[in-house]
Image (tube, rainbow, N blue to C red; front, side, top):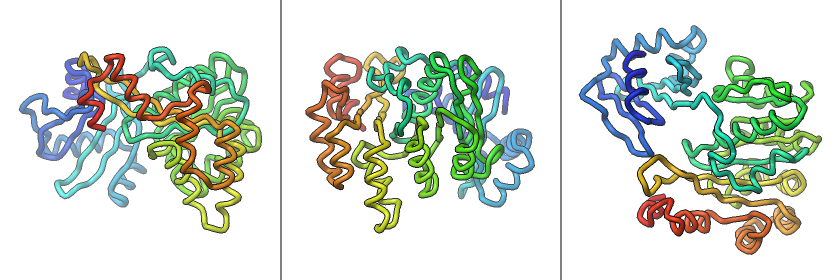
Length: 336
C-alpha cells in the first residue's frame, strides 16, 4: 500500500487519496475525484496498512468508535489520515500536508489578514468548508509570528499537521488524543503554560469556545477554525452554542475580544494549474463591535460592504474580483 501511495505522489498532484476495501483507489485533484488506474485495494491490503499504521490506542478507538484521526508520514510526505468504517467495510482518506509552510505572498493572503500576526491579543477565526485551506492559512500566520516575535506559541491540533520549528519563539505543539484528552482540556491547561499565542485546531463545543474567549480576553492572541460560512453565520454559531441565559454575556465577550473573521473558499484556476482561494474578511471595527453587542448580527454584512478601506470584503465581492482578473472562470464561480 505504501509503495502505491508513494508512486501516486510522484505521478499526480493530488490533495486527497481515498482507499476502500475491494474498490478502486480514487484521488482528489483540484477539487475533482478521479480514478488513476485499474488498481483495486484488497481487503487484506487495506487492513494490513491500518495495522501497520495505527498504534494500539488508535486501533482500539477504530474498533470501538469506528473512526480515528492521525497524522502519518509516507516517504517524504506527511498526511492527515482518517480510518473509518462504512457499509462497504474499512475505508481511509489521506489528505496530503505539504512539508514546507507557504509564505503569505504565496497564499495571497489579504494584507489585513497578514496584520493579525502583529496583534498582541484577541480572537481570530478562520472559517470555511473542509479542505478549503484553513489549516494552511493559520500555519502561515503562525510561521510569520515565529519569525518576527519573541514569545511562546502553543498549538492544539487533531492531528498535528504542519510541523513548526522554533525560530524566535518557543513552540509547543500538542495533539489531541496523544498529548491531551480533548481540545477543551488542552486549552484549559494552556492558561497555566505561559503562552502568548494559542492555535486551536477546531472550536467544536461550548467548553472549547468559552475557554478560547477567556484566553483572548486575558491577553492572549488566539487563532481558531470553525466549519462555518461567512462572518454573520460564524458569530451566530458561537452565540447559539450557549444557553439563552448566557447569550447576552457571550455577545459582550465577543464584541470585546473578536478581532477578525475570515472565510475561505477554493476555486479551480482558469488556467487549470491548481486552485486559488477567495477570502471574505470581516474586521471588528467600532460599528461591528456595537452590532455584536446589540445582537444585530444581520446588519454586519452591510458594514462589510461599505468598509473596504479597512480591509473588509464580502465573499461575493472576493469571487467577483477573481473572475474579473481572469483567475477563475464565471462558470466555476457559480459552482460554489
